[in-house]
Length: 547
Length: 93
Image 1 (tube, rainbow over the protein chains, first blue to last red):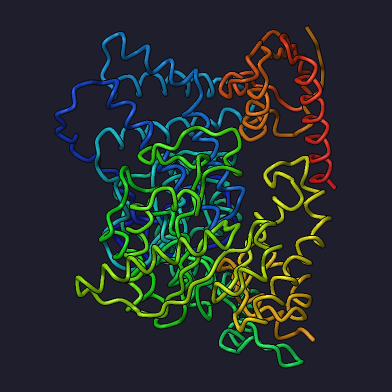
Image 2: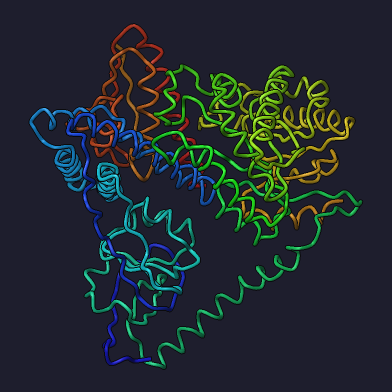
């Protein structure tokens, strides 16, 4: 293995996420994009737009992290957004502009001085927060440039990624399938990079000091548990390393293998009740992961990501392309598309949502869509057009009345007529259903069941509204945990109602993945459970084990 | 003017996440709410200000609320810290 180009070197660092990896080192290329030639000279306007753009990007990252990694890591982006909205931060920026700075200069100055303040703190956790401000700076500058950020090395294959430091937003978007591990020159065990690396299960070594660029392309052994990196090892060292890694991997592999054997088994309980195991996803990439993990379909496609990742409302064409790629990733298996579920609590500046005291109870989801018909119909048309590429169901969130359902149906029919007249193909009879996530919908389930093909229970919100308890509040965590019975009764009633009308019912909230409830859901004859990708196999296993 | 003192129980100190929750809580009240630890003072409604306190585990926080809803504000702060305490204990256990 020793290559003359790369002399053998052994380097120590801080292992911030356990595990081992052996592979080629590839250096991350931070090529700054060319500054965008813009006609806009008003620095105030440029800064406003950059702040708003960053807020939207942070919201998208938050949702992505929540769906793919964990709630804890998603909070990191929530914090970034809070810092961005903090008056001290924005006042300091505006003051710099008044001094005649450009937007970029202001961002540099203010973030640097704040970062210095944090770095100077004796508490290691707090001093590591300086990195947050630099990540925010990067995002703001990126928005001002209007350009795309640098990406992974172009070369094919997998590798160990090497960089000076990786910011939280960069690490969240890493494609795990190509990266065996990462090494950074800087960073601490308390940095967000470390937190994310652990959550993502990627072995990582930080604070190794500057590595020469000549290491790019060298084969290396990364042992994050030991905190070491051996560049260009001799054959014997490499062999030992691989042997030890293999032994460790074999233990977890056994369990993985067992789960894979059940991946394609239909989820049927011992008494013969079949339940479909679907996935909750946000985009095509997640859908592909769901497919690979044996998902029978997608029980919830969150359409918000596209809206959140853009600076203006997506066009029908952009929506259509996004839906199409997700539908195709499922290769014909059913995909339930939920229409826009946003309100004043989400940062979508171009929607111009008026501030609300209680955004959770405000003009959001279906209410917002019915109030903004043009916006809604653009989305419905995109869904209809995309429906020819697979098996698509449409689902509307936060419904409380039959009237809302009929209004949605009317708009859907109008869209179908418009598409017909323009000879644009669409699936003639897509399934139409609603989310049961308000007490009203649960109580009126008999009437609603007559109007729709299916129900999908959003247990997170249903729990919140039924217990009149904020599910984000730590003080109420125990209350929420101990009082699920009211929600379970509502689900049972809704299940009876929809089954009497010949429809089906699924559960797409967090309770779907709760293995202590699977037996009860089977007894209620729930037809489908939709969970995030990591839970697919576990839930399937549990169902098969049910009475 | 109402006061309240508590000790930071979290081994990580008053770091980003709880500071964020604390600032959000404080913002709900019209009263001015300040917090002092050692020789440093901060506006409890400002996240960066709170984080700047560098309050680590064991640090004493002295809150002062002044305004029409000062009683409600102090009560809310008390509730916030007693649940934070419970949260920390849960994690230790």
